[in-house]
Length: 285
Image (cartoon, rainbow, N blue to C red; front, side, top):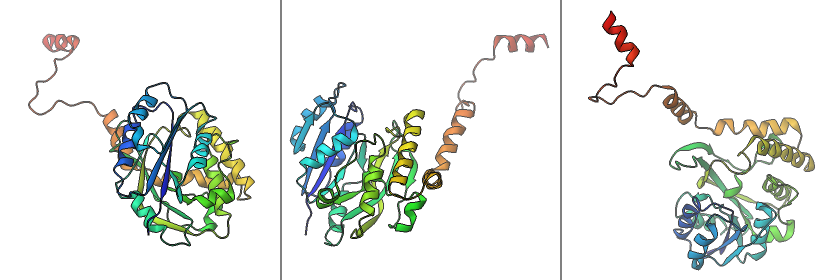
């Protein structure tokens, strides 16, 4: 049995990153899919790029919106698939089998959610992984300790949105966290975890692009934890500490070392001339 999957992409001024997203979607081997793109009236050439790929999309809308979650809600309202997921404009699927693997997991009629792992990559060097988010199986007791799956890897049956509602746009940065906790509160929920990387996400997203964004996200996360009666500051701290174990320290140390070490000449290369003052001191000696 094959599941029809709706993939929603919200875009805004991401013309340089968007090609990778579109290419990874076009390469998916799972044929029963639709791609819905909601653009927030981009002004950097993003809309022109989307129009050149118009044949790939079941829906393409470009208009001002109230933020990313307003755009995602527009996409959910237009989705015709049995299952709904998201691929942001500056992200890409990890391989061409992702949607096929997701569809196979939904062959079990009890499954209402599928999710997997995610890698954060450098914005300008997408082959360099800086954080590996291995979600692990769902354990309700871990919600108070700040556990959540990476939202870009989450796929839900459309009926879940119809029953539990869409993203709450009072949250500008953490509405996905609020929505997931709403879903996890459903006692009938049955999850399937795919222990593999499904999405590669560029760093520098809305939640961490500035100190103000980080502080706002923390405030929203705290409000959401209390709203769902899952703790307070301690739970928020544990949620943030989880990220430390996901970092790739080797890559960070290598990058720091490259910045701190002097640039040495290649073997056989001519040595750079000594500064004039040094040459004079050598002659006087």
